Length: 231
Ligand code: CA
Figure 1 (cartoon, rainbow, N blue to C red):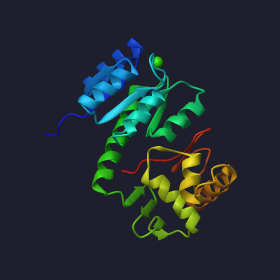
Figure 2: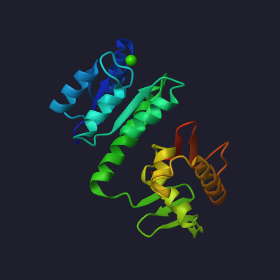
Figure 3: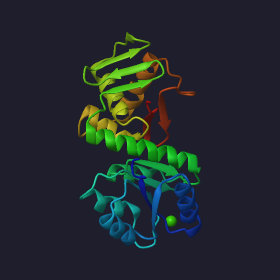
Figure 4: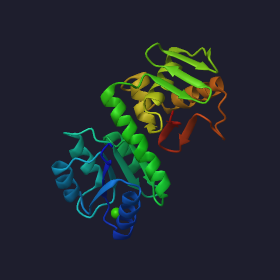
């Protein structure tokens, strides 16, 4: 039987951390709690968790500083917890190296879903198995640069393909606007938000995806886009 996944919760509000600890322990995770940034750094150095769940508003340091220091030595998945209406802060956290975020208040199911995505991504990244994406009618073969719907290849321009494959490599996780612009159009393109809107619109048309009720590509307002997780 595999070891229970080890989650470190970094949260200074006792009610929230107690609730998360009890819920996750009940779901068979091994849970540690840190109440400050320094605690978080100490505990994760001594016992590196499989996933770090990090509140951005901590008493002793900014949560983004915790991310920055972690990323000096570790690629462990980091999911940040942030208040509503803090889009700029979420974007900064993602750009600093967080893998995903949840907006407070959130349900425990939502958190568990994100933890599972993070664990899967991490192990895939280690094993280099992330070469195929399948969800409903859409399949991507990332090693052959092919996309198809219901088995029929769809014609994508190289840029459209690059965008879709970036989203697929991070399926289930949010990808920020500037990460997409950098990755697909190169550095110095980060101001060109309008490219993204145009290309996402074209992709959605080719996938037959309705932005108001999406099957594949979800908009994270003010932050980026998320391709639904494959199975
Ligand atoms: Ca807090």
